Image (tube, rainbow, N blue to C red; front, side):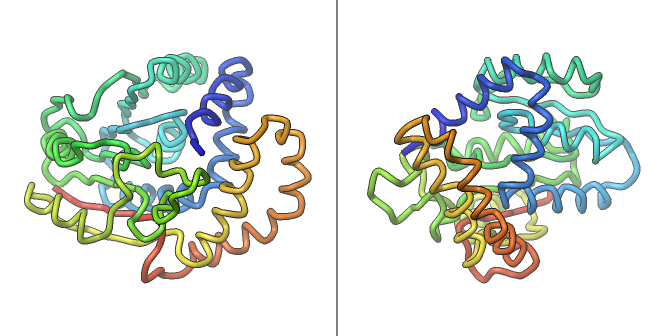
Length: 269
C-alpha cells in the first residue's frame, strides 16, 4: 500500500479547485498528529529566534502546508520552500502568488545536491529524511546552509513502529521509504559529529497516537487503495470515528511518550 497515489489524487483536486487548498491545509493540520507537534515546535522556535526577520528553508514542502502556516504565524520571515516534484512546486507558486505571500519563494531542489551557505535561521524537514538514502550527505548540507545559531527541525518516522516498520504485508507503507525510521540515538550519531548540538527530542505517536493514526489515517488509506469508490463512504466512517480519534490524539500530544512511532528532533548549529 502506498501514500503517493493518494497524495497525487489530492494534489490534482486542489490544482483543479484552488479555493479548496486552504480547507485542505486545515484538514491536514487537524487530522495529522505530526502537524500538531510540528506547529507547536515552530511557534517555540520562532520565540527563541527573537523579533528579527528570519530566513526559513522548507526542505521538502510537498503541498506547501507548513510554508503557509509559517508565512502567517512565524512573522516576520522570508521562506524558501523546495521539493523534487515540479508539479507540486508549480501549484504552490501559483497559489501563494494569488494569496499575496510575496516573501515565500519556491524552487525544485535535490537535498543531496544543495549548496546553500549560511543562508537560513531555521530549516524544517517534515517526513522527508526517511525517503533519502544518503541522509548523512543531506545533514551535511543542512549544516552548511544554517547560519550560526540556527535550528534544524526534523520530523520523521521512528524505528519503533513508524511506517508499520515490522509489518511485511501489503498493508505497510514502508515500501515508499529508504529506511525503517530513526531512533534518538540514530539521529544523534549522525548529527552531532557534523557539529550540531541537540536542543530537544521527542517521540510522537506513542500508544494513543498510534491508535489514532490507524483509526484516522491508515484504515481509510487502505480502503482508498482498494477502490476509489470508498471516497463515498469516508464521510460516514469519519462521523463515527473522529471523536475517538481526536481524543486519542490529544492524549498523545499532551503527554510524554517514552517511545513512539514518530520522532520530533531539533538541533542547533
